[in-house]
Amino acid sequence: NILIIHGPNLNFLGLREPEIYGSLTLRELNAIIKKYAGSKKARTRIFQSNHEGGIIDLIAKNLDWADRLIINPAAYTHYSYAIMDAIKASSLPAVEVHLTDIKKREPFRRVSVTKAACAKQISGLGPLSYVKAIDFCLNRKF
Ligand code: DQA
Image 1 (cartoon, rainbow, N blue to C red):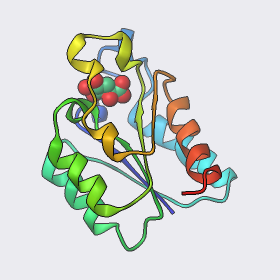
Image 2 (image 1 turned 90 degrees about the vertical axis):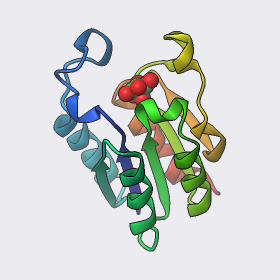
Image 3 (image 1 turned 30 degrees about the horizontal axis):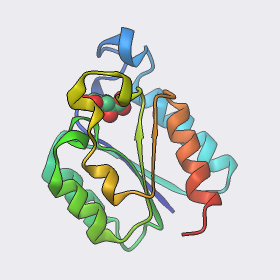
């Protein structure tokens, strides 16, 4: 059971800076995720929230169900100690994902505070970042 959380502004995918994020909408991204996870017999719950506390609540509410967490904390990646603490508190094996390569963008994006709570960070592969994260969740023994 993989809990997947998209952070702030990912609801704007498709409209948002398409030269950076591409033209895929969140709906289409979620369809790719669901299809791939289904092909691997993994169950997913997928959420998007624009709120720091909302993301923390989603982790807490799905704790009994989830075995793994895939999270794109979006801009919160770079400064949310609260989300980093929530991932740690959950004890869920977690993968941090990014559509873009945050290491090759503005200096403030090169820092991830949430990464410290995750077993792996996968960045820069567009929708494939999520696909690779599913593989990591399923193949790696935690
Ligand atoms: C992002 C990268 C973040 O820096 C940015 O704030 C996002 C999306 C990505 O998926 O590439 O909203 O997490």
